[in-house]
Image (cartoon, rainbow, N blue to C red):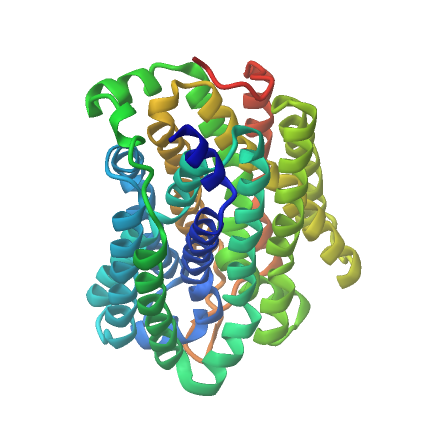
Length: 417
């Protein structure tokens, strides 16, 4: 039996299971960023302000972040196959509800269901990696998964904007929902749970107690939140209207430009994961990433009149550096007992996705405070100064993430016994 398990680690089924799980993460990212290319339509159709729109978008994140502790424990005890396939169906159903809602309440519930389903994507694919792949490849494949997720974020920007322009935001979301239903069937047919994996899990309360009492869990969670905040708070929602207003770009061009932050994440995550696995260190790449992410973001926000080419390069650099966030999952996994890896990663992912739930409405609130009263086609228009003030919270968070890394202990890429 041990020989069969070892053979299966690099057999076709584990690789296909990882690929489909990664596609679920891709799908979750399409859903996460899709409101950014519908801002004007959503403001108009639901007659809402920036703060309320930020809150509507963040309902996905409220559900996603709020479920992460439960998702981690369930992954340890039940396994990813049934959880991910069922969650994809929930995602698709929520998309249909959101697309057919005429009232804000229905849209809220739709986004909540989408987030609840998507909550199983990232920890689900990390659980597949934990169960079926060698520990020395964890950071690399986690980085590759992050790159696939960023491809979903890119698709949810410019390509989805073209679909929205062609068939409307409601029609575009119906296409997204149908894709989710197909993916759910494929996950159920291909993904398998490792038979002995669940038996290693301890009781729910005991698992969470051990994980939450570990200071390293909290430090990794703080780092993950800080690195993801700009991507979710800026790139996933407010970058498109910002670029339309400040640089005069049309929606498709602004969405394409905003997607550069996801391109940076997609490039950086597998490279940083590979380097970390190769050198057997987690802390040093995380610290370098945090420092570069902070400095590049400060330049993006506070250096006025940057040429678009320079601004684009800085956005890509920021995304690549911030993608060092992926190492927080490798680090927290190694800082906690093996049977609690899902719980530990769920805690970190609560903070990671919670960053969007925090920063999307917070930025919207700060924009509304500094709104001058200008309206175009029923949508609020904000000044460059209002955006600069609202975005101040993002480099501040990056600085906090840098401090968290400095306080961490190095794992040397070795699992705690």
